[in-house]
Length: 460
Image (cartoon, rainbow, N blue to C red):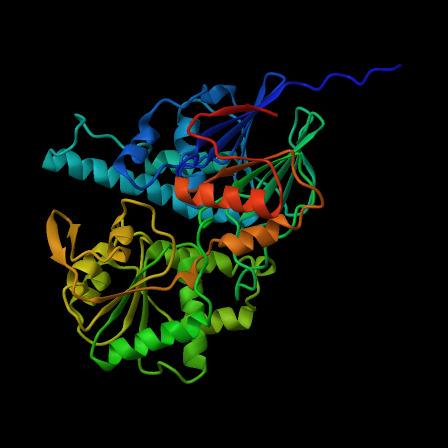
């Protein structure tokens, strides 16, 4: 009797986004080769953020390929540091992801340089001197390593590995990853988006995988039901009627474009006619321009994109942004960052949060320990730029604007598999969220699941 050849030994090590929602990094090893799925930066709580400064768990030069699911910093933001420390291979991702990383990564380097300079000047850093994780120049240089992989095309990436990207929704260019290597198929969800999103296409089913890495950000939650634009309209109308301003901390990529889309639809329908809308984020403005370069990757027509651009007041100059903080006329300000961890939004919160006529709208996931999460929890004050700012403005959360699939949508996507994977690993979620999703998958689908901890290693 002829024996089947032995399978090559293969392993998975979860080097990030395991037991937490940030720092997505998953290493597949086989036959002396290494492929890294995502190369994200840790964000949120200090004890999690400090992992960015730990030596990478394996020598960067020993990694053969890096595949990015999408451009958000918790999935791509460590790339320049990995290259600085010796990685010499390609960064494989969709064409829109390359364009978005081209603005996100240099901006990240610039902010880190600025923060390090400020810490040295004020002498409050634990390190002497404070240093950036990487510089703007290093981030710019890292873009030379990026290589585009088209959606839906099985691509040979060397060493016998085949890569296929499918649309994931979530943000422009976001992909699920399927890796065929040594007679096994490993699938990675990246971040899954919403079904019936007005801008992005639905997450595509994969159908088959021997092993699945699945995000679980909202594994224990369901988003609000209803019309997001109507909820937003009611908030804006209520706030401006009492002479207030609506301030929206927003992710520059994805959320800012969705918010401006809804506000455009409302104005087009005759609502909010006299209320000006300001997009106060150069990065969000640049990301909106990239949307117009990839019309085949989303639902918005060129004509509608032009109308949206005409409706929004773009604020690039710092002095113009400062003028907004003292302008008492009713308006809507959309500004980064989405979790209020930095950027121009902090200046707007300092100005507008103490006034009960105003409203702060939280429109997406807030990592534990961030100012955004503190606002959602109902805090009376927020520490901004070294002083306590009273929160007397109304605070509203619109979870239906989230770009992440909720528990029901995650289950809907899983039902697209023709048979269960041998093992499903729940990553990119806080422990309670991952645990709840694991119990639901086991109960409703009967699949075998794991919830990895940081640096846990599994044989595949």
